[in-house]
Amino acid sequence: MFRFLTGGESHGPSLSAIIEGLPANLKLDFEEINFHLKRRQGGFGRGARQQIETDTVEILSGIRFGKTMGGPVTLLVRNRDWDNWREKMSITPVENPTPPITQPRPGHADFAGMLKYHTDDLRPILDRSSARNTAALVAVGAICRHLLKTAGIEVMSHVVMIGNVWAKFDSHVDYHALSELAEKSSVRCADPEAEAKMIAEIEICMNEGTRDTLGGVFEVVAIGCPPGLGSFTHWDRKLDSRLAGAVMSIQAIKGVEIGLGFGVAEIPGSKVHDELFFGAGEGFTRGTNNAGGIEGGMTNGEPVVVRAAMKPLSTLPTPLASVDMKTKQPVRAHFERSDVCAVPAAATIGEAMVAITLAETLLEKFGGDSIEEFASNVKSYMDIVKERGFKPIFEREQRV
Image (cartoon, rainbow, N blue to C red; front, top):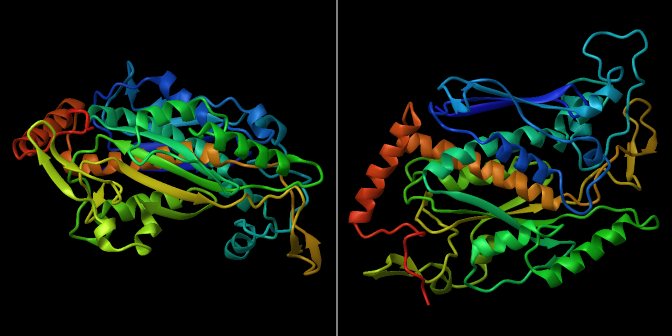
């Protein structure tokens, strides 16, 4: 069984994760893992913290000579900013503790967390709930990508909206070309015209007189998924519900949709469902992909498309009204250094959560104590579905 657990605080010594259930002999590329950690730190509109940290992964267990051994993999991402917080976040008791922070930020975990954990200081809530902790998730996701590659799956993302500026794309999207353009964009947007407008919106919020934050929408796409990942038999085995939960777990995400998503409620069924065709050279194909590659809780062989809506960050340069949890008097919310817009970074975290979820479902379906056994099981299954007329998306002839 694949599972993982993360630990650490935003201003603690490090972030960590333990991954269990990876097959033995999976070769890891550490430069690739660090590459994805760097991507998470990028994007126009990020704050000062990204200038302090240079995230790299350290492997503490489960790897020998660059390959998994079958046991738990322990990884570490150190916080360089810890040097500035040793006293404030000391693990051992200190003689003069830092005064508590008692002004919760609307929209953050502060208020409910202080009540739930019976604390008069929101610092413990702030530090664990911080999006800084997603660095560990990205590292786990980067490792999962290596397993996905063995099964012929790629995961990519791009930003489709920031500050109500929407990107425009052709109806038949070339996701590889889209991804290449997104990687070159400071806001991860593949539409140059929309990119310029998004940057302008972020600059307005950076202005001293405006001082605000912006949210947006990003899209994660997984290409090459074999048909049949997930299941229709139980609520908790449906892949779309698992993907939605995984992406929704990212800080500040308030909505997730698969494929056409909420758009299916606006048009008749004849325009929603993806008609099925068959050609000798292509095998089974679809005229559209409104289902986002998932039908009945299972992949159908088309690209899996997940969109997420990210709210504007709740740490505002011009703080909102709040109440002091100690005095019960009206105050302005606590301000902690923050980003103006983190949608481009959130897209890379979305990739990680999709990769993690797909890795979990792949191992459930194909199993294997070694990567050789896993790959053999994948091949055997793909041989069977190919005999029935299915062709993987990379093997299909180019459609006109």
